[in-house]
Image (cartoon, rainbow, N blue to C red):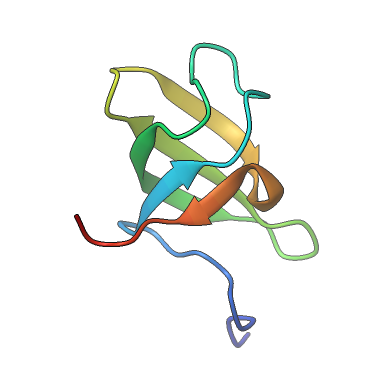
Length: 67
């Protein structure tokens, strides 16, 4: 199945787009460990603050720009 445009992928750097994620303030940078789901894409993310989140909906993530 082809990846949808704008869909995030494994190893991609991301930024938390809201304070919705426990232990992860908005603006925290991270890296996607696993991308899964077909109808509802979800992600497992390792954050720079040491937290790890699973089942993260794409609406809570944005692709990171290079520093």
